[in-house]
Amino acid sequence: MCGIVGYIGVKDSLNVLIDGLKRLEYRGYDSSGVSLLCKETGNIKTIKKAGKIKDLEDEFKKNKPCKSHAGIAHTRWATHGEPNDVNAHPHGDCFNKISIVHNGIIENYRSLKNYLAGKGHKFVSETDTEVLAHLIEHFYRKDLIDAVKKALLRVEGTYGIVVISSDHPDMLVAARKGSPLVIGRSDNEMFIASDASAIIAHTNQVLYMQDEDVAVLTKNDIELSKVESAKSIDPEFVEIEMTLSQIEKGGYDHFMLKEIFEQPESLRDTEVGRLDKENGTARLNGIKDYFKKLLDADRIVITACGTSWHASLIGKSLIETYTGIPVEVDYASEFRYRNPIITERTVVIVVSQSGETADTLAALREAKSKGASVLGICNVVGSSIARETDAGIYTHAGPEIGVASTKAFTAQVMAFALLAIGLGRKKLLSFEQGLSLINELEKIPGKVNEILHDKNKIESICRKTYKKKNFLYLGRGFNFPVALEGALKLKEISYIHAEGYPAAEMKHGPIALIDENMPALVIALKDSIYEKIISNIKEIKARKGYVIAIANKGDKEIKDIADDVIYIPETKEEFSPILSIIPLQLIAYKIAVMRGLDVDMPRNLAKSVTVE
Ligand code: M6R
Image 1 (cartoon, rainbow, N blue to C red):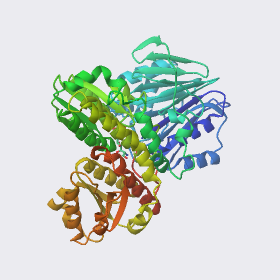
Image 2 (cartoon, helix red, strand yellow; image 1 turned 90 degrees about the vertical axis):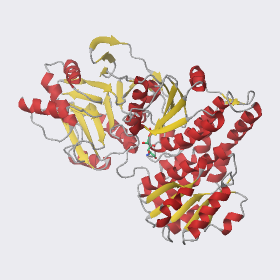
Image 3 (cartoon, helix red, strand yellow; image 1 turned 60 degrees about the vertical axis):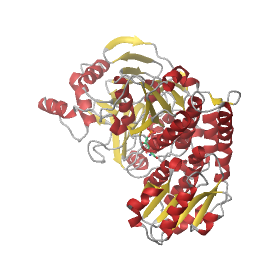
C-alpha cells in the first residue's frame, strides 16, 4: 500500500528519502515521488514518476536535485486516478508553496474540490490528496500548523499526512487518522514514515502517532498536539525491537524465500515462554484477563482477511475440538456489512499480520460498537489493530516483507493452537492430553526444519508444472484451509489460476475440470480421513488427472496412486497444517521464479491493504 517517508536534519535529504522509499517497496506501489525544500532557492522541488523507484532516481539525476536537508516522499498504490506521473504524490497547492504526501482516503473530496474550484483553485490531478493540499492553502495565513488543522477538521475519511511549506523550511507537519505514522529521532535529525522499516537504519527511538495527533518536527524537536486542540502532549519515544538484518534479504534471492526458511525460528518465537509443561497447558499472559470471558462465551467469532482468514479457519477447528465452544469465522470485509449478531457473551477475535488492514480494523470497530470484547492475534507490535483490541496475542514472527504471507500464517496457526490448548484445559482436555499437545507443539519447529532441508521432489515437480494454466488444491478437515492457502499463494505470485476445495466437494462440480492439464495438489496425510482422501485421489486418477500428493513419511500406499509425492513428518492431525503448508509455499515460490516473475512485488498487490 502507499508509503510515506519524511526527513529533516543535516544530511542530504534526497538520499535519506530514496533509501526510505526503497525499504517500503515491499508494500506494493505503482508510482513514487519526492518534494525537497531547497536550501539555496528556498523553493520546493518536486519530482514524481510512474513505475519503479529506479525511474524516479533516474529522473532526479537528469534534473539535478537541489541541496536540501528536509523533504517528503511517497510510494503510491492507485485508488483515485490511474497510476501516472501527475497522480503520483507529493501534491501541491496553486503556487508551489505547499507540498503534501498522504496515505488514506478523503471521502468527501468531490464536494471539497467543487468548493475550492469555485474559489479559483486549479487542480491538475484526479486524486483526493491534491484537494487536501489546496484546502490547506485555502486556510493558510502564514501559520502552517493552523492551516493543516483547519483543513483536517473539514475532511471525512482517513489520513496519514506529512506537509512541507517553502515559508517554513525548518519544519515538517504530520497528522494521522486511521493511517499509521511513526516518528524516529536521532541527533540533529527527525524521520517520519508510514512503516518503521523505512527509518530503522537511522534510529531505534520511535514514537507511534495516535489518531488525531498532529506533530511538528524540526531537526531537534517535536511538538505534539491534537487536531482539535492546541494543548501540547508529551511525546513518548520507545525503543523499537526491529533490527536492520530482519528487514534485509540476508543472502536469499527473495524476502519470500527468506521468510519461508525463517519458519523454524519464527515458530519458536511464537511458542517461547508459552509452553507450560508443569500444568500441561499454554500460558498466554496477554489475554489472561479475558480468559473467563472466553470460557463463558456463547460464541467466538473470528474475523480476518486473506491468509489470516485461512489461519482463522484452522483456529476455529482447534478451539471447537478442545473446548466445545462454537466458533464462527467471517471475512472482515463482510462482517461489518451484515449486521452481525453479537451478544454480551460473544467474544470477537481479529487476526492480522500487519495490524493495519482496513477491513479488519473496521470489523474490530463494528464489534466493539456492538459491545463485544475484542481480542487480537497480531504480528506487528504497536499496530492499529494491536492498539485498538482489548487484549491480544502477538505472534512474534518478526517483520514479514514478502507480499505473499508465509511465516505469519504458520505463526497464526501456532497462536491459535496455544489459545485452544489454554482454553481446552479448562474445558475438555485432561492434564495428560494438554501435556502431550504441548510436547508435540515443541517439536513442530524442528519438523518444519526437516521439510525445508529435505531434498524432496519439489524442484522437479515445479519443472513439470510451471507452464500450466490451472491448478486444483484439495484437502479435508484441518487441511482444507491449507488447500485454500496453497492456492492463494500460487495465484498471488505466479498469476496461475488455482482453486482450493474440500477434497470431497470436488465431485460436486470441479471434477468436470479434471484432465491431464490440470495438476491436483492433494494433502493426503495419515489422519482420521486418510481413506476418504485416497478415494478422492482415485477419482482424479480415473479421469486422467495428474496428482501431486503431500503425504506422511512412511506412507507406501500413496506412491502407487499419486503421480508424485512430497513427504512430510507426522504430527498430530490438528497441528498438521503448519507442516503441510511448507511444501505448498515452496511450490508457489519456485513456480513464480521459473516463470520469471517478481516474487516479492507481485502485480496489483499491496502488503497491507489499508483501503476498504
Ligand atoms: O495483514 P493482514 O494479515 O491483515 O493481511 C490480510 C491479507 O491482506 C493478506 O493475508 C493477503 O491475503 C496476503 N497477501 C496473502 O499472502
